[in-house]
Length: 475
Image (cartoon, rainbow, N blue to C red; front, side):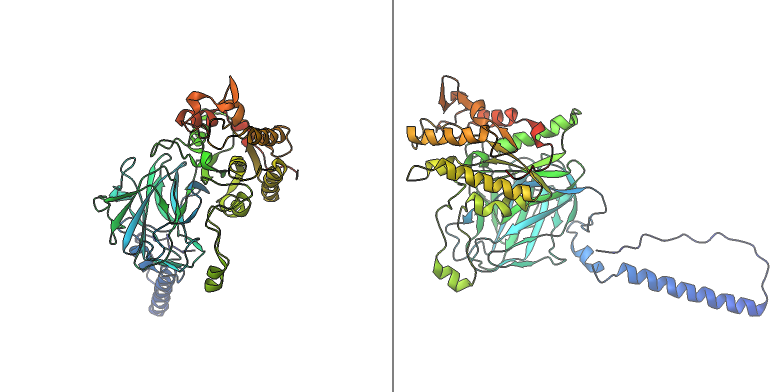
């Protein structure tokens, strides 16, 4: 912890005292001199405490504004998060060497300080980040930053960090006022090849890339390349006075918001976050939580996605690589339980176990997998709200047999033997004239994923009161 000397007195008030004898004046002068020397020594020792050199504070102010650890109070919560999905195709050899990656992320809650998490989970060699910054965007969907908010990030006091293959790192906190609902720019520069880039492919948000080290550029002009991916960054935390904890939305493409409007933040967790904040502002007695999105398109409860690492890779690196699009069971600890100050989890998972299984899925195995997630959350004292699986008649994967599996899973969920509380998204979005289908205006057109209106309906039908309370006894 950095020590600071906040004292400092002005000149002493002039006083009239009787003259002291000469020998007393000699002794008094010696004592005054000793006090001055000791005071100076204490001052410089505290100001230059070895825990944080004074030069480090200067180095962390690209625009002259202190970037030191925050003095304000509050609670660290997740303002934004995403799940690492795999190694980005085409980056196996060079990674993003020699380029600046400017990720655009949307803060669900506000705070007075911020920090980020960078991941090299799918890298096959160490990732060097020599320069990273954080800034508020000047508007929605832009690479331009508010120059006054530009902050240089450090990692254990250093402006650079080396993240080992399979690892992650959290930056030091920087003092920065982040209003809720603001786009935040997280920019990294890697000077050397690092192998596959850990990324989230279906961001539904445009981010930017520039050649060279442009991390502190505020104009956005060098960022001529657009990308639909989030790279390296997996979390933005804030020191918040608006929230006391974090809700994690854990799911598949429906939670990921794969069919929502790009750049509009219309995924159902986005809208749920706004509903919760509005309810609190209106005086309702609800938990003060932020909401972060840990959805992965194609995710299953039981099975990993494609790209399972081979034995040769394990032999070469000496570590067990992580499967791409790791199953819900495999990633729950990393993507849900380990999020900052998590208090509750909302799970909407299982439909891909039905649709992607070449055989007919076993509903009991899916329900058992979901119960396993709930037991893990309960062991951490967390409440779990679970969603029913929405209909998909008309989708290319639909069969009457698969529909029967969905109905069996939903029956178990509604019976109360899986989750602490239920969000019945199926009942809220199905077509009243054919419950095996999505209602037409809630359907994006592929008969599986909701439209923007459908995502809004999911969030609107969610009972905010179900977020109250901690985890229940093991089911």
